[in-house]
Amino acid sequence: MMIEDRMFDTQQAPRRVSTSGQLVGIQFGCDYNPEQWSADVWVDDVRLMRQAGVTMVAINVFGWATIEPREGDYDFSTLDTIIELLHENAIGINLGTGTASPPAWFSRKHPESLPMMADGTRRHFGGRQAYCPSSPAFRMASLRLVRATAERYGQHPAVKLWHVSNELGCHNALCYCDESSAAFRLWLAARYLDIDTLNAQWGTAFWSQRYGSFAEIDAPRLTVSTGNPAQALDFQRFSSDESLGQYLAEAEVVRSMSRMPLRDSRHFERM
Image 1: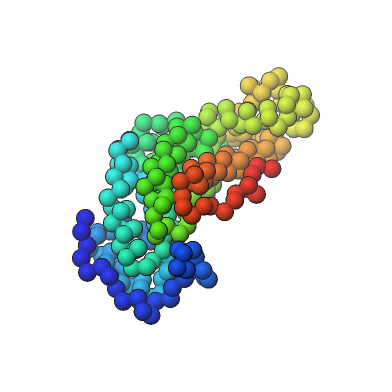
Image 2: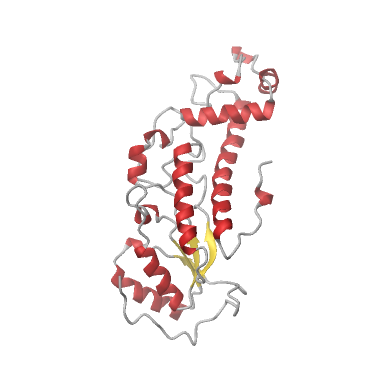
């Protein structure tokens, strides 16, 4: 993909990158989603960015389907063109890992990865974040994408920051599917160590809710009466950890390949 006449006057545009390539001062920018319109608009986009004094844009936040239109078939040509156009015009890049929304082929191949609501109904492909945070298939496919993206652009001088996933837990924070239930049991076993302790902490003597083993526990789907509030609270904690685990896994891949190391994320460790 060739774009001509793509260099613009930068004399009046503020520079917020040092000679060593490090960011300095306050950056001015926004999200930029050029894959959503035709390439003949991109040059004008960048010209207007320069006039406005934009120094950085976030791209590839929802780029999974563009980069991997078919499983294992990566095509970076569009993203290559966009990155070079921005770089040639001294606009820094906050590069998304692209994992915020899986493509249609993934949801078709892994219908069990689609999120389930508390009433036991599935949500389908077509909106944002159509995946279960506990899905092993999603974790595996998303990290393959992150690795491929970081391998290609981790050393690129235009990449100043990494945008890891996007708004984790915004729409799919709580998933009540069987895979979530299985992961929840493991989380509970690690937290309480034995089922008697869980029963005591959850007050399961009430309404004959006592469990004989962790294997009997599911995600707290809707019941005909009020559910156990302690179970609901622990499920919220578990679900937060699942989203955090996705972030930490992606960040570790990026950190291992990027010339711009991520800020130490140990303070995000599970508590």
